Amino acid sequence: MEKAKTKIDQLKAVLENHKTMLIVMQDNPDPDSIAAAVALRKLANALAEVQCSIAHSGSVGRGENRALVRYLGLNLRLLDQLDPTAFELFAMVDTQPGTGNNSLPAGIEPDIVIDHHPCRQRTRHCRFTDIRSHYGATVTILYEYFKAADIKIDTPLATAMLYAIRSDTQDLGRDVSRADIQALTELFASANLRMLSAIQRGKVRRDYFQMLSDALKQARVYGNAIVTNLGAIENADMIAEVADLLLRDDLTDWVMVYGFCQDTLRLSLRTEQERLSAENVMHRLVARKGTGGGHPSYAGGQISTKDLTPDQIDRLEQLITSRFLKAVVTETTKPQDLIRR
View 1 (cartoon, helix red, strand yellow):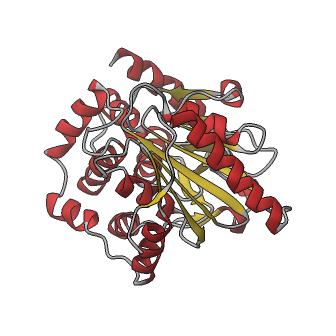
View 2 (spheres, helix red, strand yellow; view 1 turned 180 degrees about the horizontal axis):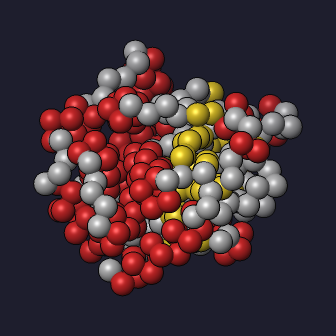
């Protein structure tokens, strides 16, 4: 708690004497990004009366995430529709400069970065940083700020923060810390459990089922690993969602799912194996091609395909798949279809 008190004092010093701040999330924000942004907005207003806008690029694709945004009544802004000069301060939550999964305008160095992914080199130059890669969720860091500053968390925000921790740690089943468990336990008493249930059962568009069907039909089994290509998609969140689903296969301990969205090849890795870190494997996949990062059990990456020909894209797919199989498959076997044709 002493660290949180020190951080609160440092954060307040950065915020003071400013009126506006833009909070930048991941391009396709997940519950942790969304809840962390709302939490930082409330803190900024309570500590220094700073008015904040919350922005991202991409889309909020998953049904659960859209339900969360509606519940919070958020007016999320698209970065390319904002004038950066209208803001005095810039903050990033659940992402960092140079990670490739956000669209922070070029030339802007954020004043505040709060994240639970490994620290990036550019982040070290920011005025205020709090990077705790051993935490399961970014909102856990912000929850400690609320406690240290003795600021009350209202029911909608408590519900969002609780859901964020449960989502990012898969109900405390992956990459969780003692701090996450404590935050979840204490937030439980203030959350709206009926709304929490409704968010978890968020409605999906009908094309979701077609994408899911295509993903399963394309899935190939390579021993202890599954690979599937979603092709061209509009909802980038579907890549991570399919990866989570496929890892439930009882004979599989590695999954790679990829798809193409907005001139970018996007990748998700999932594993239950402790021998290798998903983050390290992702770095191998995108080496000299793109960017990526994550945690021991899950990771994401992206490679631009904007200037590539169809043949070059085919070779890129083959390269990524080859790197993945070489890194994780324990014995060479002939690939098989996951679903009988």
